Image (cartoon, rainbow, N blue to C red; front, side, top):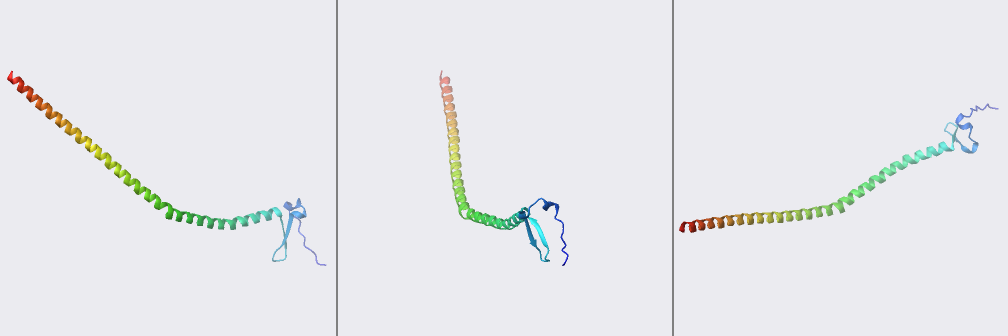
Length: 132
C-alpha cells in the first residue's frame, strides 16, 4: 500500500469544522484546503476587480452623455440668455448715460441762463443807479 503523505492541518484551520472547509484539487493533483471565509473574500475581490472595470466604463459613458447633453441642450440656452442679458445691460447703460448727459446739459444750460439773467440784472441796476 502506498504511503500517503499527510501534512498536518495548519493552525488557522484547526478550530474550524469540516463544513467550513473547501477542498480544491490543483493541476498537480494536490488538494488545497481553504475556508469559506477565504473563499468569500476571494470572490469579493474578483467581483470588485471586474465590477470596477465595468463601473469605470459606466461612469465614463454617463459622463460623456452628460457632457453631450450639456453641449447640446444647456450651452445654447446659456449662450442665448447671456446674449439677451448683454443686450439688456447695454440698453440700460445707454439709457442711464443718456439721462446723465441730459441732466448735465440741463444743469449747464440753467447755470448759463442764470448767469446771463444775473449779468443783465446787474447791468440794469447799474443803468438805473447811473440815472439817479
